[in-house]
Structures are given as C-alpha cells and as structure tokens.
Amino acid sequence: MSKSKRFGMLSIAVLILSLGLILTKGFNLGVDFAGGTLIQVKYDGKAPIDKIRQAIRVDKVYESASVTFFGSDEEVVIRTRASSSVLGEDVGKKISLLLKDTGKAEVRRVDMIGAKVGSELRTKGLTAMIIAIIGILLYVSFRFEWRFAIASVLALVHDITIAMGMIVLFNVEVNLDILAALLTILGYSLNDTIIVFDRIREGIRTIKNPDLSSIIDESVTRTLSRTTLTSLTTFFVVLTLFIFGGEIIHGFAFTLLVG
Image 1: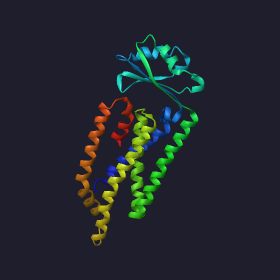
Image 2: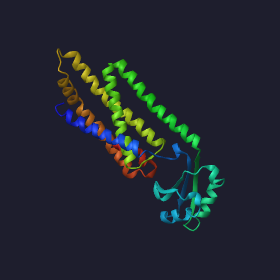
Image 3: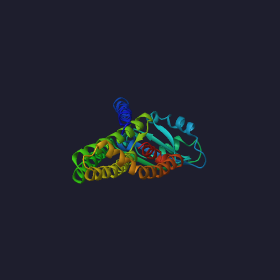
Image 4: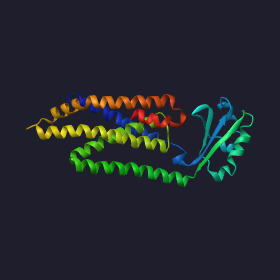
C-alpha cells in the first residue's frame, strides 16, 4: 500500500491513454458488427496472398476487401464491407472465377451479414456487458457493502477499458469472439477481486480499531501466491493459443492475454 499512489497514477495514465485511443481512433468493427461478407478459400498448397489480392481487386466491388491467412497458410479469408445486394448472388462462383489463375482453390464458406443484423448484434453485445456489470454491482453490494461493490466495478471498468485500448492500438478486428473475451476478463477479474475483498472483510471484523491500509496489505499478501499461480497458469495457456492457435482465435487470445 505504500506504493499505491505511484501505481495508482500509472494505472490512471494507462486508463486515460486507452480512453483517448477508443474515442479518437475507434474500433475496427468486423463483419459481425459492421455487416458485410466473409469468404473462406482453401488452396492445395500455400495460398499466394499477394496474387489473391491483385486478382480480386480487378472487380471494383472488392477494391477495399482485406485478405488474411486463416488458421494455416493454405487458407485465406476475404472480408468486404459490401452487402449481398451489392455482391449479388453466387458470390462463391464469382470468387472462384476471379481466383482461377492463382492456383487450385475451393471456396469453403460465404457468410453474409446485413448492416441491420450487425447493428443488432453490436447493441446486444453492449447490452450484455452492461447487464453483467450491473449484476456484479448488485451481487457484491448484497454479499459485501456498497463501497466494495463500487470498488469492484471500478476495477472491472479499469481492466476492460485497458483491454479495449490495446484492441484499438493494435487494430484488432472486433467481432463476437472479442466480446466473449471481454466478458471472460470480467469474470476472471471479479473472481480475484472477490477473494481479496473477502480477506479484507474478515480483517475488518476481527481486528479492533483496524488500520485499513494494514488490513489491505495483509489481505493482498495472503492471497498473492494464489493470484500469481492462477494468473500465470492461465497466462501460459492463453500465450500458447496466441502463438500456435492460428488466425481463427488470434483476436480472442490477444484480448485475453492483455486482460
């Protein structure tokens, strides 16, 4: 606790920077939330990603499309904000024709999400997060006290905001997987907070004329080994997913890694 002011200032600084990034740069919304089309293509060998980009951009509809590897260097995903009304029917056939000179390729799936559906998913996702935070506030208020509840919610907002700031900084595409990762961070953060708060509550009850700073020091010390062990084991698993998991869960693993 003697270092709390220094680390508090550092924490506030990172929080403000994260908020600044979110407000100025904004999120890179994926097809799930912004609407658009996602096309997954599999090659027999390594996908010639530069040739693919050149080939699809012959058609003006795909000029702004992004092409990335998906899971392995044999599969790619083509993402475009264009809707089904712009692309028309038989998107798979059109992509196959555009890519015919890039190698033997198979269109595995075509996902189309309208702007209205994307907006609905975005709204429901934000609603889910707000409901989770309100639920946590009510539960902690019931189990502990209002001051504990407010402190836990502030801690959760702190963790989520910094995670979102890193998502914006590294231009990670925000989709339903990222939302799931943020909700997972909420759960992990709250779990550790509740354990520390339980120790603090015990200290307040058992020590007469307690010095709150000393009680917090003691409580954190008692739970530190447990926190370190659980956090490190989770960290190593998520790090493994981030390095070896491939493109399909890259954003999810990155968000959890930061969280």
